[in-house]
Length: 117
Image (cartoon, rainbow, N blue to C red; front, side, top):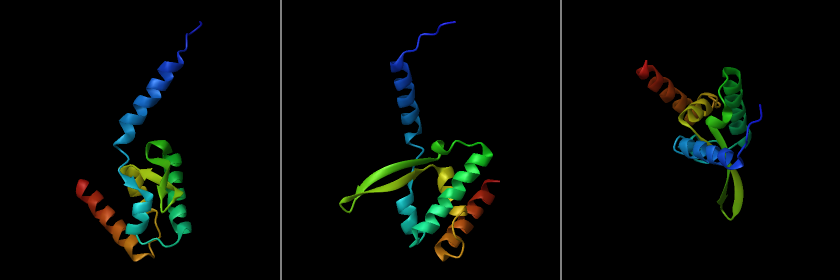
């Protein structure tokens, strides 16, 4: 059976999804990097990679929790990530625990999770 495909419908659906999820992305990796005291980008990217891997293995679409963006700061364009609540949580728990700021954030995340149980 032949189905008519309207490109405008696809564009509108994609735009609707983008606006629906826009308010879910509350956190920026660059802000968390500063708050968590990451001075090494390698450690931060490793935490991101592990977070992506968890999403993949759990069947959670990465794009629903992590959005790559480019921001203009300090007169240059820099890559950044917007995170959902789950994305922020995954980034924190996958961080380097030898960093005292990360360890404290991991403890706070665990206590917040325990309170919800």
